[in-house]
Amino acid sequence: MLSFLREHSEFGIITKTIEDEARNVLDRAVFRTISKTYFVNIQEKIKTMTMQHIVSNYCLDRLDRFVEECSSRLPVNIKERDKIKNEEIEPFLKELVMTTVRYVQPHIPSFVKSREIREELTDVIVKSLPSKGIVYKGMPADRDLTIMAEAAFIYRKYKNKEKIYVASIDNHFIPNKVQVGSYLSGYKKYLENELDSTVRDKLTMQFGFIGDEPMKILETAKREISS
Amino acid sequence: MFSYVEGCERVHKMLNAFLVNGIDEDHLEPLDVLISSSQIDEVKVLNSYQSLSQQRILFGAFRNIHNTSDEMRTKLRVAHAIHENPKTVERALEMMESLCAIAPYIDEFLTHGRTKESDKVNDLSRALYRKANRLGFYQNLDTQLKNAQIDENEVKDFMKKLTENIEIDVETTDETL
Image (cartoon, rainbow over all chains, first blue to last red; front, side, top):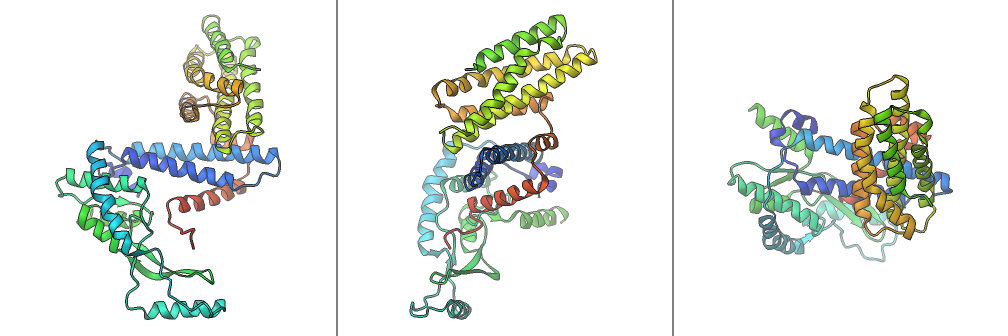
């Protein structure tokens, strides 16, 4: 997708919030990686810390290049954006997530102890369910709400005439894979070829932006350019 | 205890003298001291009682100071050997602005055993790295990995763990199940 945007940078928008968030995600992930590492001795610690430093710098350099090469930066009115976030998007999602589930967990009596039977029963029940409910990963984090508000702000700025896609792999923005679980056996899996786009579609209806995976947006963009 | 503010001032003076009189390999001592001190402090900070996140920031700062000054010494030696016009010295002087900017914060840590403005140190350290890269005072990726004796498999292993943690952070995998 970034290669495509290099050629058509007028289509790409990386706001400061997105750029900062990309840095924060990288920073948190690197920190999580080193904090989970057990250092046998100081030599190992020096090596790991040196590696994280090299990798972080490399990733940040790439990010800087992407921002420069693949995007335009539109001015975002912070006051207006925060108003959309606090008065529209947050209440809308708070209400919505009251009726969503993080994953489908059929009720199986606790006396069914065997792991295999619980897993088999889970599959059978899920298959026979008429509706699996709306799958969504709970209330998005504050940073996600800010990004959504920026997308809505940009959509309105173009007076609703342009399509605004939000490329993300975060489940709060895109159609959710339907996850099935059984608490007692620890069984979990994703249903093949099943995506629940209910929340994404409701967000699109209400605020205009369309969240999807980068590769899917790329396909759409290529199609729209060629047509 | 080595003072980075004073150390940077000495390097600054040394470079100004080089600008007037030409590079003198026998007078690189201020740079040598900066290189060795920052290398020692890299290890010291990892052995300190600071939190891991503070250690990470300060280690990065010391490493950037060390790599920059080390590469500066190499470049000055090459410039001397080829009787180059003062381009390298001028660039080194430009580089010193970033080194001098971070030095007081490093000294604060060394004096008090802590730093109040770790975000500021992080920003200045990144700015130092970027400038050093731009001016050619930072080793390339392969050299850095080679110097640290990190092989390809170790990088791959680290990247695999990092990718997993990025997925957890952006919630593409669900930790709760």
